[in-house]
Length: 457
Image (cartoon, rainbow, N blue to C red; front, side, top):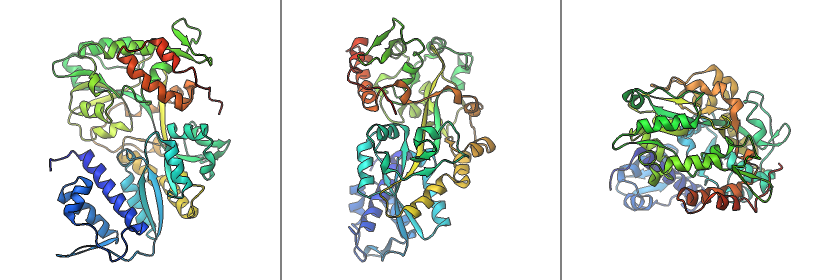
């Protein structure tokens, strides 16, 4: 089998581990039964023999299986532990050190076992069904899914949680059922920011971006940065965590002639989107063929094949081992200097039969201990204001401007500020692909907004 990169290895081994645990705990593999052979498991999970053995060794340590030499791997008698199932977005293993946090929780609470179930992105119906069926006891929920839960009246699926005064006050309203009653407890957050290769700028004798820059000033810099076998900028062009910025930063004057009104009164500020299309289709600036790949921009940046990217504190975790100097800056501005706020919270299932046990785990993830670990050993921003402002990141070669978030909170906007439903935003993002390919125009984009509804949440 060809050697796989570290991210793929971690994703596949987590999947194998979670899948086998689920089958053992559900009885699909009963006590005394043997698991498939290592060769069969390598084929089933698309892993090497060494990787399969690595996962099996973990299950041995957890007491789920035993290895019998020259015979096979046998499922053991279940230990007298209470198991809770935790639905988690896969990216949080890297963004929040989730694997280490669960390990530390197990050490503090040896009578509780946390079984993880990977959640899909942008599929609120699927997540809601997992809750309704009692499959998960606690879960992570990001703002995209939270807004869809609000729109679809799914909030009753979350058990009420009390407001925590140690959490940043700007985060809690996004996860409220009503004033003071939370559907989910904020866990981590990040604004969208600019990240740049300092060595590429020095090579061209160019100044570093700062908070006063306009997008036109950035475009001039990007043209100067063009070089053989290297693009100037990249990001996930059609991601809902990126394109809304070019809408939100052009909303100061809804009556502008440069906006295309939709039937329901929502205006489409086209200036920023048109500017973006002109930029990314300019030769040597943007690798359009790679515009949709997950982690693609960060991968290219780490390989020094691009000089600048729009990213987040979450995604800076992809650069922990970068062998060159980089830094961050606030986004440039159009009519305003807003940025998009991303956040993930921890929710407790109202359908869980193990609420007290699951609540113990939820409380741990938002505890000082867990939040301090996130702060010190990842680039992600903990939701705890005290922890974020008291402790420092302990990673090597960290960006010098890493703390710019402290003065950035007044600029935060979310998907809700687009004043259209999440369903319409998803359709709009799909239409952007045609727009960026010159297969439709601004009027075509505005038509996507016609059946949309304003958010009155």
